[in-house]
Image (tube, rainbow, N blue to C red):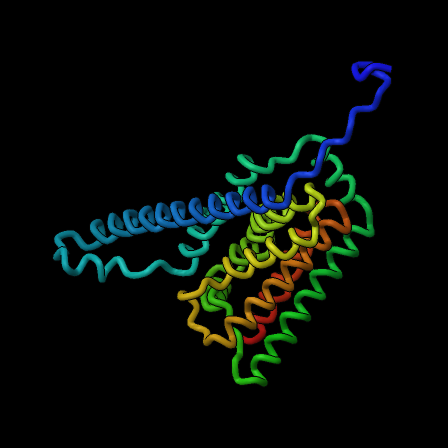
Length: 270
């Protein structure tokens, strides 16, 4: 048979080089970070403009030097909306530009979601990650380095003032766009290239660093390291359940379960 004979099976495509996969994933992450920064700045400028107009209408003739003090700082609801715009917008944009799922992949994900086992793995993973987070927090407290996530105060304040909207954000919206970015885009690129364990490591590290940025956190070095370990372990668990079930929705459900339990604990603690 000739090489052009249709009966001859085509040679399998070579796997992408690891260096190329890493380079593409770094580009994904850099693009996401740049979009987050730009959208966050745009959101804060929009809030400041709206707040300035509100101050001007309520207090006409206010001296310019007192306008900034009157504008103040964004409250918890405004911070949530800016976070939703920045991280959610960045995640959707990078997904659409870099790792959009095709029709077959979306159908397979929905089919996997219909299996009871998928729900069992998702809920079990959510419970396990919450338990791990609580255990590591207790360990830090015992060692004198209690880890306090940067967003805890904002979420607590938002739960007091806007409980339903905060739960919608923490349990549904944030898990959806975070899983879209960290698991579908970052981990998924490595998984598709036959490098799932490297993908778990890379996406989990990115997940940890973007949740607790160095230089911004008020935690001490020991608490920051413990938070990074916690977030990395949680991210690895979500990547694992995504791969185990074949559906990103399983990771979203696990993430939402973890966040729901965390919000319940914050509410109980007051």
